[in-house]
Image (tube, rainbow, N blue to C red; front, side, top):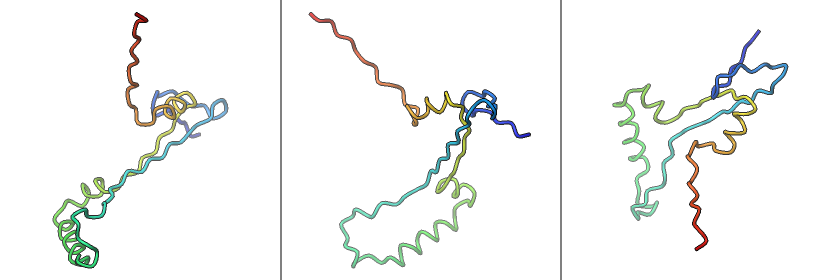
Length: 102
């Protein structure tokens, strides 16, 4: 029998009593178009690709893979799912100031 544990709170998730939620995340690098003002007609795209390939050959393959693309998968219990959906990036809430009515 497969046992599931919430990756957030470490509570055992009983499939007969609880719903198990799966969170899948992808993190990948993107390249924005060059903002140097050159028009596409003036750029040598083949030369740019060649330069990128040369840099890739010099880089560590495993480290490069993690820098470019990663996937993650987490099991969550119902309570941790609610918390995750309210604050998926884990940011601390902004503090509210209570001013007196002077």
